[in-house]
Image (cartoon, rainbow, N blue to C red; front, side, top):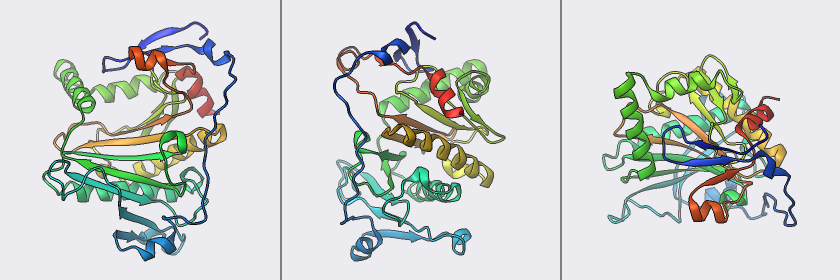
Length: 311
């Protein structure tokens, strides 16, 4: 692909201009992912022991004798939402993924990444018990350009009574598709993308691909093949497959020195979602065109991104 091409999102009314030729345009401003590890880290074990806001420390049974990984789940001490605030009700939690200060999620073993995913599942299951909560977002900010404020490997859980408009719109469009076609839009989508040059990885349990109208350089989506509505429904083999492909993608991004965000949505009131995880790298900057028009320019074609991940 050499010429620019306007592409529409699968469901939402969003457009992306894929412009491979722009990648060669001149730059005289260089940016880099900044990851600086301070000696005094709030998420290191000694600091965690000193503060009493811990929800739980998890040392999973299946790894007690094989690994020293300990995953701490703590309340966010600077939350935007709180159960004590009726005007902004919800939960915010931080998941400290490893006791080792200098490790990143992508450099952990597949088993350790799997354990982090299982913690997302456990926290989702617990937060669903609050009948006021309808939306649970598990997400990770890696690198300064992705909004990370602490370098120690961690991710977060955000649970709210408010369903974001974009998510609501996407679910409604998927529902309309199912009413018309009698099949799940995403089940059909992953089968189609698994046959294209945008496929990154596939096994018996998951499919990963670069979306057709990628908004970000090297964007990747990971889907469960089974029609599951949230992470709590994954079985052992599906957790393993998610961990395997997630590690593969994160290591590839580390090699490029790119910050990234990833996230997964859970809508409590909708049990017919199709579970997937989005990874959105942050080396590109939305500038005048994106902010002014709403059109997004992406100079890395998803086909090229998928090829890079497959290597």
